[in-house]
Image (cartoon, rainbow, N blue to C red; front, side):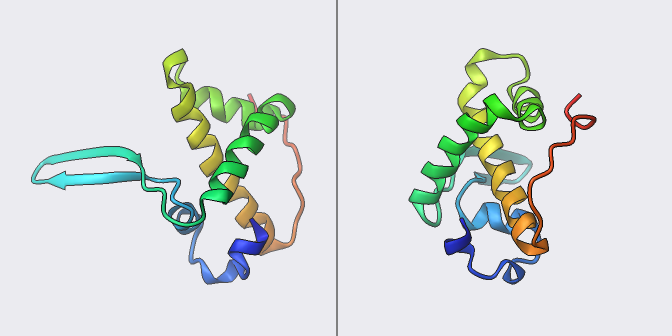
Length: 113
């Protein structure tokens, strides 16, 4: 992640990092219809693959990330992959913020509930 981002200050906000790695849905909009499709897959595929694998690992270890995953899944087992991509997007944004501020991950159990 750090190798591909290089300078975290070049991104104006966290959503731009998600777009850079292609972890946002594609959009097809016409008139009053707005359809969100599959992720755009822009950027380096190796980062998406590694962040997806990291998402599976962090789900077992972090109550905060586990709570985010469960909110994204909405109690529907068929939304597991959608929730995983949303969690990967969340992790990319968190990693960008940590790089930008020079901090380390601190688990906040109060936010996990």
